[in-house]
Length: 403
Image (cartoon, rainbow, N blue to C red; front, side):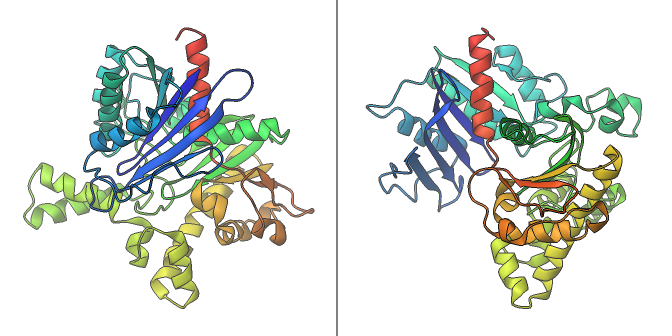
């Protein structure tokens, strides 16, 4: 069985082709269309050995998600490629009616259309891609895998906002995100015999979240109704005083915007123009921010300090919530590759007895690695995020069960 996995972002589409059968799904090809909607859109396509198959076709024409997915489908449909038997899609928000990964039907598509109200910056592109690919492959099964499902185990008290019941009845609650990443971390640690009872998973990248996990199940997480809340991120501010949002709406109105224009202006600010880019004045790139901070850039230094503090504060709070901390796992682009962020986040957790091995922290590779010091009271891991593999596993399971 060959499974095409599509992971749609607001300006990119990542894709992988897996072969499933006995044992683990095996990655055959992977790639990405980046910069969708810009004049500098790029296309990358390579096989499992890392051989470039993109034929130097970059920059490419990808003015929309539909044009971008055309490049993907062209790549995986080349002569000699295995026929696609099923497609799995990462969908950020399922809305109020969907609470599990499932095969896509007309009813599911209607529910996804309703979910756009909760994720207007993420779901529309995914829905557009789903419709396009289903049109190209009408005879095979298509499956939606949601970033929220892992957090369905959170207790009601963790998922509930203290707002009027009539609003909560609309499905307004804390959903949590990065669930496929968190699930992949738990799965890899189980395979390595390293699952701890009380664990914090820090998924740190352009988007960031921190999740409290007890016995492999999510009990709390930083993101809420949308992926904009929680800790400070690349372009998003994390948690804000609700009064600040009202202030921004009033300011937008006073500056001449009306109605939906006010909302759009504030939405753009909070999702694209805040976070570390707002503090540093630099592009959304932690490496560039750290280089600037190292050269004495005051704004870049503040951006790093605010980011680190926000994550450290949550890790400490979750440790208290769980009654202790047995392990911390770092994943995501920053979590996996920025040794300085790991060191600085953990340096303020001395009271929890957390200590890392500096050499191990600086020498991490591609696979799961343990980086805590011998006298640390909590284990510390760096774990690669394997969202695409998790989607392939879920698709394989659902296909075999007839779902």
